[in-house]
Length: 116
Length: 113
Image 1 (cartoon, one colour):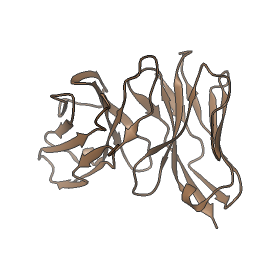
Image 2 (spheres, helix red, strand yellow; image 1 turned 120 degrees about the vertical axis):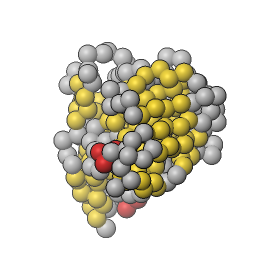
Image 3 (cartoon, chains in turn green, brown; image 1 turned 60 degrees about the vertical axis):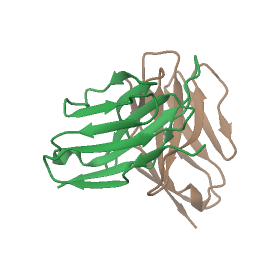
Image 4 (cartoon, helix red, strand yellow; image 1 turned 30 degrees about the horizontal axis):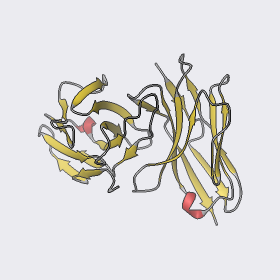
């Protein structure tokens, strides 16, 4: 178990630029989640994949946000035309699929985005 | 929509003492899961303990235990014999299906030596 890996750890960008984050889940986990966390708040759900299929998206995920998991392994989260309100910690988590059971989430260290 | 409320933004405990963190949630579902996660400063979030709603017995993991009151929709975390390493932000989370988990806004726990 090498853990969930996220890259980069920190990203500073200017308003209007596009950014892309990567998440490598634990290898045997087929579920992958993206969350956003702002200071003093709990993680907010953005989207969820089972294998390569994106099964659920939050209303928080505006059309400037897109997530992919092309081969059911790593995932990318892209934010286009960034805004200052996008500044947050972006967390990736994974879990195994066990029928009829909700496995706990295994989180990465997150990518901290600062939009100037 | 499901909501999770942690009414204590900050708590403190003396080392070796016991502390209880509160969590309430709102749902119309009968089958779901509840979790407590710990997020140390600048470190990743990890699972502390989980509870299946269909189980009446409260979950226990070493010094950590829960008081699950399904009818009251309450899920508190008790930390016994608190240690300095327990200092962190603690999040209560609800999950109905394999999709999203809903998190509370967290309780920051300080452990005083």
